[in-house]
Image (cartoon, rainbow, N blue to C red; front, side, top):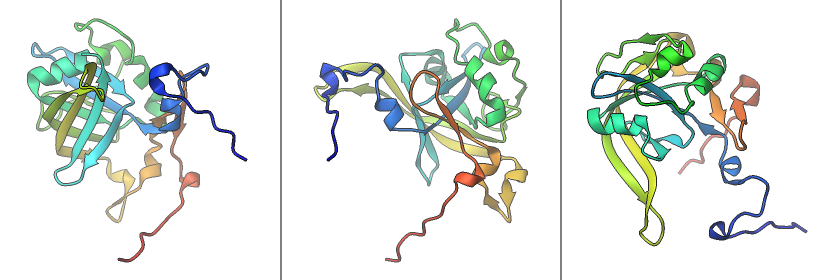
Length: 206
């Protein structure tokens, strides 16, 4: 018989490490580049991130606290999502450092930038995919009682998408070819998507 570990989150999980983000994993990484109203570049990763709509393409990330990325997006209404690949994992991690708002994370981590076409924030030059986005909603999250949290959900519409053509076969994007990295649980767990992990399921005919 299955032995269950049950807990009510408000009372604590009773484990050495919170299992929540290890259960809902791996999660794609929102590597978000922004610029402040005065033009300072910012680059930071967020593990609460995903695509939330096809047409128009909407992506969302959630920030624990009013961080520089959120402040910049609130001021300029623009940001770029950059795909994190295995060869970019270490420099992505370097941009997670807690530094002051006047620090340029591109320079801090030695990351080359390249201009975007439709928005002001730059792209990560080595990232093979990038979405240029415009803010559609900035939502402060609440708990079930209506108490406001210091957690901010940013939703943006991708108005320009860059794809390295080497990732396309006959116009079909090959997910594993980029070796994208996703966030696992625990303080340091990440996963790399590779071709040998691929399996296919076709949807039932309606």
